Image (cartoon, rainbow, N blue to C red):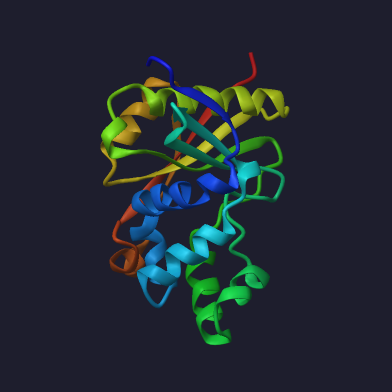
Length: 196
């Protein structure tokens, strides 16, 4: 993989590129919460928490990120107070409702991945694999027993990557009538045991 390094967090100077990369990967799922894409991207940009990311860089450029949720805190602060800082009451109510349907279940013994994304130009270089390995190491360092994630049914490439790294399916959920809102029908929950 050459000179690609993975470290905790991003700098304020990288906030724009990190939020754009995250929105490119997950904007289809997040977009229904906001009145338009620009509002969603700006809200995400201000809500991202550097302390809940692992970032892959090469020569100072962000190539990939892995957001995670642990200890009741996720990659983005999209709670009511945060939403109200940038949205009207009506817009914040809408966003809060739509985003609540995507919320993670709390698990004190797990590091829950909040999304892995790799810049399109850097795909196929093993960056996703390195981010998964870094997430497993982060879980061990913080005393978590497992790494958990959800993968949408449409993303067979990501699921194959997770399976190659030892993740096992633990359940499946469908969105039913909400499928058209989010752009996918369902997702599979997967888990990796990181305790030896």
